[in-house]
Structure formats: structure tokens, C-alpha cells
Amino acid sequence: MQRLTTLLSAALLSTGLMAGVAQAQDSSSTANQSQTQGQTQAQASDFSDQQLQKFADASQEIAGISQNYTQQLQNAEGEEAQKSIREEANTKMIEAVEASGLEVETFNTIGQAVQQNPELMKKVQGMTSGQ
Image 1 (cartoon, one colour):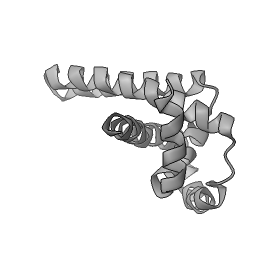
Image 2 (cartoon, helix red, strand yellow):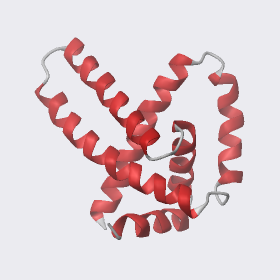
Image 3 (cartoon, rainbow, N blue to C red):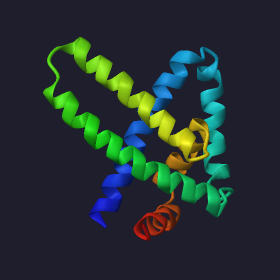
């Protein structure tokens, strides 16, 4: 159970990083952000089992990436080296989400819903424990 909580925590932590990257790329995202947050709760029950499975799979991949890059960050010397490692980690995490078949925005929305809905979290945890 602790492994699953750690897995989801790493995935949700990384989604915050990915959201920051997406916001930097899209100046209009701030205006859309409050609308998206309002829709998150409404859409929480609208995710298919297939989307949740993709989220679970991507979360596991991201947890591994996060663990690898956390070790690299701990060994990095200087802010520039740490920034480079963070950017590389973000790129790898985004690639993992996209490889799962989800868009980053959808992954983030599911992540927020999972965080806010204990029943949804249990469902996703059940999907990851089978692997």
C-alpha cells in the first residue's frame, strides 16, 4: 500500500512540474486554468476505465523516472546542473504520459481528480497493484 501511495505521490508531484512547463509555453493558460479547475470536479467521474488504466501505467513509469532523476539531482552540483536535470526529467515524464496514450492535460486532470476522490484513488491503486 505504501508503494502505491508513493507511486501516486511521485506522479502527482511530477504533474505539477509538467503543468508548469505547459503554462510557460502557453500564455493564455492562466485564463483557462480556473475554468479547467472548475471542470476537474465535474469530470472526475467521467473517466473511462481505459483512461484510468493509462493513468496508472503512466504513473508507474513516472515514478521510476522521478526516482532516477531525484538521485541525479542529489548528486548535481550547482543550480545550472540541477535545472538541466529537472528539464530532462520533465521531458521524460511528458514522453511517458504521451506514450501511455494520454495527453498531459488529461493526465493532470485525472491526477487532480484522484487526489480529491478517495474512491477514484482506490480504483487506480487497484489497477497498479495487478502489475
